Amino acid sequence: MDFETVSVVGLGYIGLPTAAAFAARRKRVIGVDVSQHAVDTINRGAIHIVEPELDMLVHAAVTQGYLRATITPEPADAFLIAVPTPFSDGYKPDLRFVEAASQAIAPVLKKGDLVVLESTSPVGTTEQMAAWMAQVRPDLTFPQQAGEQSDIRIAHCPERVLPGHVIRELVENDRVIGGMTPRCSELARELYQSFVRGDCILTDARTAEMCKLTENSFRDVNIAFANELSIICDKLDINVWELIRLANRHPRVSILQPGPGVGGHCIAVDPWFIVDSAPEQARLIRTARTVNDSKPGYVIDRVERAARRFKDPVIACLGLAFKANIDDLRESPAVEIADELAERFAGQVVVVEPNVRTLPAALDGKVRLCELNEALLEADIIVILVDHAQFRRVDPVRFQAKVVIDTRGVLAHA
Ligand code: SAJ
Image 1: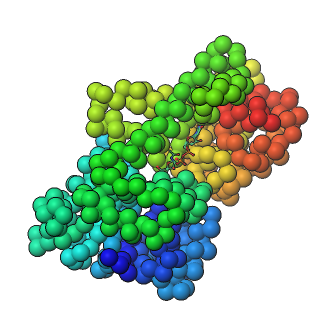
Image 2 (image 1 turned 90 degrees about the vertical axis):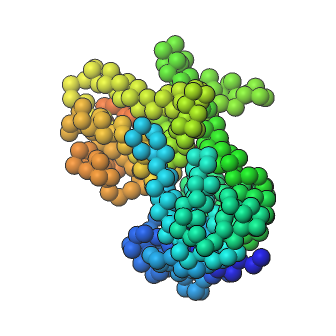
Image 3 (image 1 turned 45 degrees about the vertical axis):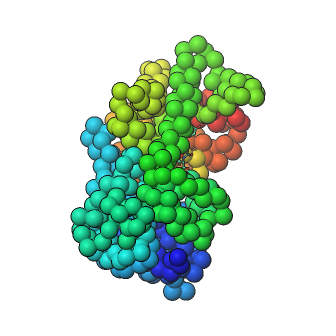
């Protein structure tokens, strides 16, 4: 089967790079998004998100005529759905964007088309997506009705790229592909092999769904272990960074790094999908989430205790991003901490974030964004929230006369 035209639905952090990767392999790509702003920006050959090298790729794809964006779905040979799958109140998965996307493309489906769900999803979502499409198109058969003889082929192929390294990881990482039938898996593999250099490994849809959730839960549980260790070490007056460095000299020990909490759009969300599917069984996974979510509060309490020694101290927060060397402030524990400190110490909090020029809405008017040098001079208390390269380069002497709360081990690694 030759997939000449590929439609990518959802042109965000995953969909847009994926669309550009297909276009770079000279596929005709139709990008679909509900945002007119995103569509217009892409059709100008520009991008509406931040990811290294993506702007060049999209610009080339659009100017050479391989990529075009639209609000309204059009016929294609393969469809990839890469829309958000957040959780709603009570950590319940919210699948409304998958539902809307599958209902939007259903009218343009034709016999022989392949539909792949890329969004990170609770187990069973791929089957649910097929059911939503079948409701709109009773004239076509789907795998749940006709098995290998179905008109439409359905698979799940979760994305697993690291923000900041998307372009390289998209091509190099192995992909897990789970079709609703073996033939669905085979066809999806053919599609991905047009740009993926890693292995494309086949399984069923439910295993592929669980695989992605497992990868991020593995990381969450291991970060929770490191975060719990850091709190224990504070109590026992042990340097946790040194401790972890020493323990990791054991050939079968590999502890991750503590931090101010877990941010981003994936690791703090995906484990809840497992908890929701198996609430009684997922005890460790749920506890890890709770441990990581409580870390910002612990950091705030430490600052508060340190502040008691001063009258109206100036508190400098170094970093707002959810991890080092990126400009993504969404779902960042650093923003949560700066926000709460600004509430408790109104007018006394300054913030340094070398990767942004303006404050996020949550902090606007509450804290002052300033240069690193100025913050280091002014501050009585320095709270290191992100291990950006700029902070690692600071001469340790500059921290000496200050109270430093180093949540990332920047000083320990100096
Ligand atoms: N963090 C720590 N300590 C560590 C490692 C990370 O506190 O030792 C924190 C980071 O500071 C950050 C959060 O965890 O706040 C998440 O950062 P990350 O770099 O671990 O992961 P993400 O969210 O940027 O991307 C993850 C990746 N998953 C895995 O590494 C298993 C990526 O491959 C996935 O594609 C992505 O989630 C996703 O979309 O699901």
